[in-house]
Amino acid sequence: MKQTFKIISLLAMMVCLSTSLVLAGAERDPLKPRVPKDQRGAAKKMKSPFYKKASKASPGIVAEGKKIFEGKGTCFNCHGKSGKGDGPAGKVLNPAPRDFTNCKFHKKRKDGELFWVIKNGSPGTGMVPLIPSAITEEEAWKVIAYERSFCKK
Image (cartoon, rainbow, N blue to C red; front, top):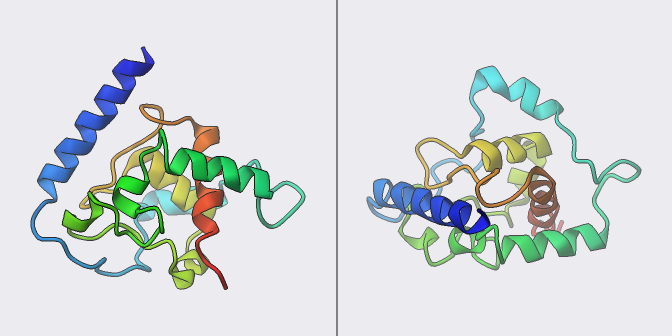
């Protein structure tokens, strides 16, 4: 069953990649929200289960997020291991994948918005829905904790 989900996820990614393979280009507006306006309020209210007593996730959760980002989540394929949106698949996408090293992006986006995009994908981009085909909701929150670690400010 897990193998079937992986195959479906990869096929979905290939379809999205083929539809966005125009010419690789920079992210048009890195601060533009990707959650539809009518769903943004609810998304912003979603909170990570890993921030209960602190404003950020523990180093252990961040490490688990890195493992998922670079493994079964396949995030690195587009976002790159550096988080700059420079992964091998990301190089051909237009718009380019999010650059998670952009601290302005992190200050502007709430965790719930990032979760929404991981769960639902992002229309007009190569970002496909990853929940539940590739990762679980809990794993998505861990990936978000790791994505946040790319901002070094």
